[in-house]
Length: 199
Image (cartoon, rainbow, N blue to C red):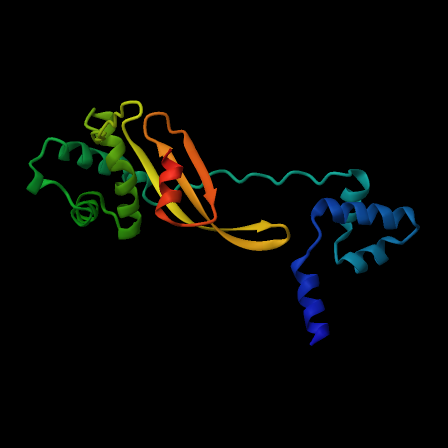
């Protein structure tokens, strides 16, 4: 059982490229041959040359962004969504109707339904916002007068007192106007402790 665990642990902690380069340089300074380093670290000759020439590995080359399949159809989808802004509710396009229109009118053959659905879900709110018809922000403004309202809670807590765990009761009161809070700890959970917390 132990050798398997060691194997798993070794596999899970692969050295970073910086650590690998440092180890290669250290072994090369100690006089280890190139072939021995290749065998020890399971790397090629190019990696050893790069490690000996620079302490820092080259940054990875970023690949250019690939064109996605729905890219040619995005303007058509946008036009459908813009037209839907003025259409009656029952005549607006569903994602399925948009997908079928792309097939019939634009020869879509290789764009899947989930891809169209994801694009419509992302783009529809943006088009509504661009047209000034974004979702209305609905909220109820809360106004509290000073000293008028508060939220109170009373519950058990365990504290360490003189090296022993002692069950106590914590009273919490948060003032609605200022947001400030008051906390009191008592040994009993009776009504008098609750009223003392309010005082």
